[in-house]
Image (cartoon, rainbow, N blue to C red; front, side, top):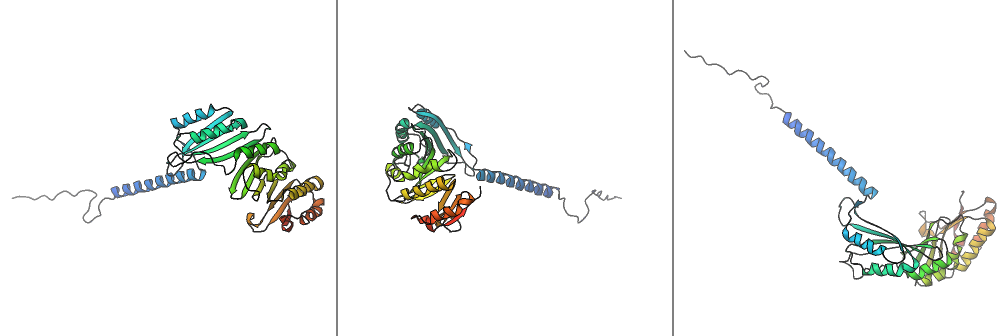
Length: 304
């Protein structure tokens, strides 16, 4: 007589119970961790993009190019950087910052033309004149593979304009540029002294600046500084000079900015000044009685 033994029940597993979920839970946890990591990486890259973080990509060619520039006569310093940015980390950008005296500028510009450095270059050149005027120039040259010429185009005759700025603005730190066709802008990079009277020679000789830069007499000249902002059209220099001289010398105006409607976010052309309260009526009278377009502008006094 045989006896059949039933298999012993397996503890923890009952008939009809679902399969274990341990593996499923582990996969879900791994997925959550992966998502968190991806979000963290994305935030880091986004932060790099917002901050325009540079990731250096030095090259022997750039070091050789920097050495070549540093050996040029009149060059006081050379700083270079080659970098990439998030998110592509490709297409390196090269900047070359050079300080040079006026006599050494032609050789530097010739070297920029003749270089066989392969990448495009963003140039920042600081030229010191014999009168201690510092003139900042900015231009870019395309990569060697794309360029018919590597020569720097500033939009004006750099040498001629530097000489004229050195003559009329000794000791000033200035940056000329063409922000839009038909307008030469001269920015005071570092404030030389309080008030704006030291900038009035730039106003007086605005036509000379255009001529020295090889630009048309009809072009505008914009003077942009912490204490003075004016845009001069052809033939306005003498009238503007007389008005600004009166406001500074006789009315105590220390800051003066005039902007037409296209330069204002609210679309209202205005003159804004810093001046003594007791002189405001006389100042308004001087501006509105002038033959300049600003005679019709709104006038606003700023406390300072």
